[in-house]
Length: 214
Image (cartoon, rainbow, N blue to C red; front, top):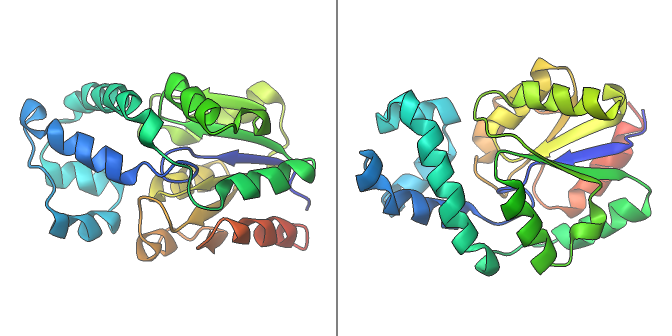
């Protein structure tokens, strides 16, 4: 099975946004009524799923969309200081050279993503950017992306850094690669049984080649 379409998550997978998002979330803690994260909390939350983090925060679900909107808005102010994950530009170049169709599915805004890609001269690698303002509905967003673009699910892989990325992919039966350099820890990701777990962008090339042997 040769992979033809590669869909990346954005935050934590392509862009190194983890620390920026933590800083922003802490700045907004008083406005939304939750406790800011202490340095000692960081490793603990990396072992939790999104649902578990929300439960522990005590933040009512109805406030989540408003919090996410504020975080995205604040993140745009910091966009010029954000960097791609080390090794990602080289990975994208090689995948493009192999003739892969490369896209992004993210819960961040299209504006933030396009601004970031332009700053780092990465726009030309991507055929599409799909922004879906959802936390728990990523499987529906993935399914819609596949249907709208007439992609064959068997020839597509999703690459993300969170347990919810794995869960969404499994729900609609598409291949998923989890990366350990983003939000969730390797221990948390392994529990969700991704098809592959990688520790560095260059390993994605090996994984894509290995799919052809399955």
